[in-house]
Image 1 (spheres, rainbow over the protein chains, first blue to last red):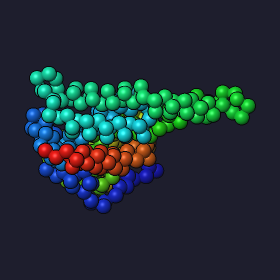
Image 2: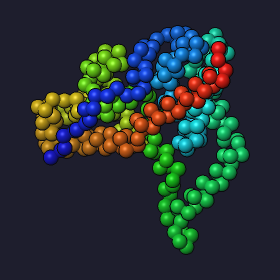
Image 3: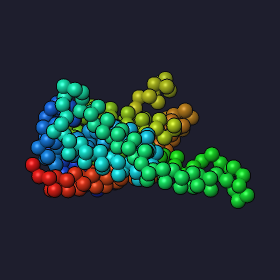
Image 4: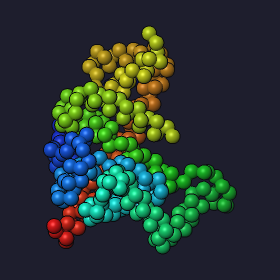
Length: 206
Length: 81
């Protein structure tokens, strides 16, 4: 007998939605988003974050392999974006590429830093102790880094999928309510929910 | 019925996310009983959702968002327009 899926019916609006009910349509033009961020609007920040945090986090985590470091670097990336948004020039490239370069540079700078070199040494020591038994024989190829990375695999998934799964599965909204909250057609919600879960399956099987 | 088509139809994802009616859920459970491939696929999907839940990704994302926003806001407060 397969257990019937149960889920919370708390019917609360997640912080990121309630702070953000009028965020720009996901299919908006980038120029309006840039203008919104340039005007230092909170709505602009949340829209920008919703749209790009997954991609930016993805590139950072691939380089630094540690979620605690990636969290800090994502923060630094957004601070830098916020600070330098006035210098963004759409004639020289897309906003996405511009931000991706900032995130990549943050991660590369970190990897070259003295802090990272020290942490690397500590990780090597940790790895050695994890993978050997009391007399020093190698017992396993598993390591703590892989586990940390695995724990946040879902963060690599495009937020457009996870926000639908979160609203339906965690927050207990119906598909129709989710469509209303995200201002998207019901068909898109159904498609994203199905595809999102399929992608999670692929991600966790890797 | 083509089992491959059934598996890729999306109904198993709907089941896992609680998007089906009770009758529809019963039908999926009967299919799992009759076809091991369907049961296996459903198991993998449920397992992924469990891992996603265990990862705390949702809470992490929301917490991180507010942490980043605080940092950005502080920068703005220090250097207003």
